[in-house]
Amino acid sequence: VSRIRTAHLQRCKDRGHRFSMLTSYDAMTARIFDEAGIEVLLIGDSAGNTVFGYPSTVPVTLEELIPLTRAVAGSARRAMVVTDLPFGTYEESPAQAVRSAVRLMKEGGAHAVKMEGGAYYAEHVRAMTQAGVAVMAHIGYTPQSENTLGGHRVQGRDDAAQRLLDDALALEEAGAFSVLIEMTAEPAVRAAEEALRVPTVGIGAGGSTTGQVLVWQDMLGLGEGRTPRFVKKYADLRGVVSQAAGAYRKDVLDGAFPAAEHVFDQ
Ligand code: KIV
Ligand code: NA
Image (cartoon, rainbow, N blue to C red; front, top):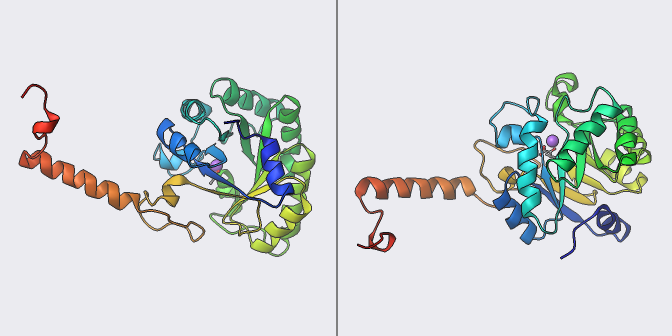
């Protein structure tokens, strides 16, 4: 099997095909998703929530995402492996962005990085691309900026639609191989997908993007509480795992586990 590369994703757009992307933070899910044909695996800074139990993505560091990236990149044989640049690891300068991206590639084995931010960050994208880093831009709702965006709000409505388009075009011009658009009004997303040469990837962005991405714990129903409207739940892993854990505990307390077949030399 040959590795999915940026050219493959571009071909999807050029031929009117789609591609799928899921988060992954460990070797086992990476292997399962890879074998299921998922084209892109993302070590998202959503690991802050899903792995580390933080209230947001803001505290996540390179030191945390590097070992998760190594696990995923070492396990996926075909998928492209993309890792987020965490908050605080790129904003200061294009040089800081290059330095952080290089660490994700050298120490983690990432094939590409994803960076939140609009046209202001075009020079960061240009510097990384020129250094040999494949960059996926991330616009629309950008969770690292929740404090300046005024919380968890749908982006790209009314006057903001033109800004979204300007951001997308500036990031493409700077070299981004793809633009991810999060939680944005559908008309603005459609305009961006149509104006760009490179493929867009959507989450909470409607069906006009070339790719779709979800956080795997949301998609498989592992999390507690309600999931956002844009998530489709393909399984109820929380129910499955919870029931199994309860059954195991009951067997242990009752002495029903281990049984004869689990015991050596009995
Ligand atoms: O961190 C993440 O998982 C992401 C996706 C939700 C796009 O950035
Ligand atoms: Na992210």
